[in-house]
Length: 245
Image 1 (cartoon, rainbow, N blue to C red):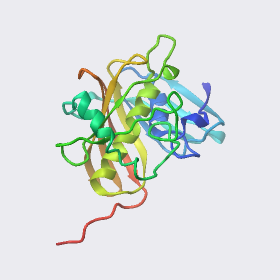
Image 2 (cartoon, helix red, strand yellow):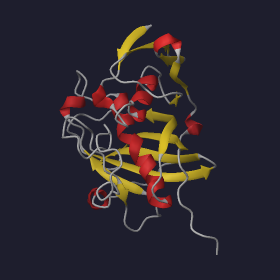
Image 3 (spheres, rainbow, N blue to C red):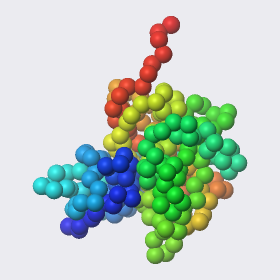
Image 4 (cartoon, one colour):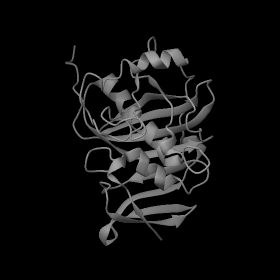
């Protein structure tokens, strides 16, 4: 068992850990594809316990409450990844990020516009011109502040970069609503270096009841697939639906 503390810096909502970051911590010790399930709000700045091995990781809070679990996954659970847009198209998509004109989570580690370079990831995925509604992209160049001792970006930061774009894919397609990341199944094929230009993509897959599933991916600027993941989001309030014809 090892002690862990998730600092306020890694928040999603102001009082809870960023879902992708925390899911990435649960997946980090598992080789190959991994699934992380978040079961409760992730408290910030309090001691937590992370225990397990390459077969299972468990994050527990005060009193032994299970906050999240990680386990190996099959590659069959991962989404087929569409060809990424060009670098220029990804830059253009950023200007369409829905969070520019609307306030969502302004201090979120992944997508918060009030976080500065090197403090937050500033991943602003927007609709790609000419693609199906909800297919989003943006550029992302990881800051050196997030690198490990070898200058590469660790799993938990990569998963955090992929977190919010999957939510915004459904916001663009269905309208504004709230949702929390419940499950994320992903793999990192290559860890990018700090300062390496990357492209993030996201697309909606299926909606069933209160569950929305998304695909997300990370590419090098030249199109090399670096990471991909399947997400399940739990809707907190139903998106608006158009009236029946």
